[in-house]
Image (cartoon, rainbow, N blue to C red; front, side, top):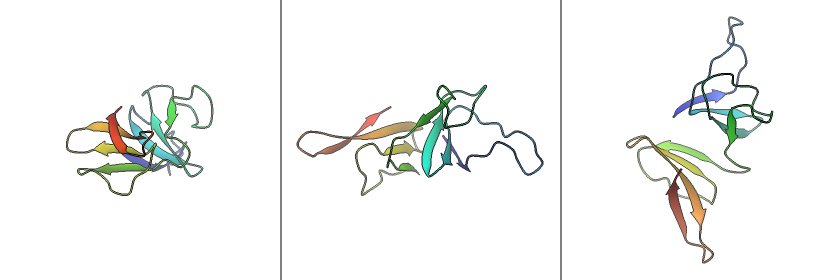
Length: 99
């Protein structure tokens, strides 16, 4: 995972910005993860190569389990290199699933 910040089509020199598999960007207050490295389109288009983390989902990039999370949140464990998604059971118990 590489958190790249706000999505940009071009850099300060007018060159196209290249994104790669698992790059994370923010666009229109939503978080997207690149699902491929070639031919990435704009995050708002279908089949653009970007995966929307979900409405209201938060993204955490830490070496420890984040606190105060909710269903749909994503956590990239920097120690193991594994991405997790927060899920909630019918009884309200929250748990992480490797994605």
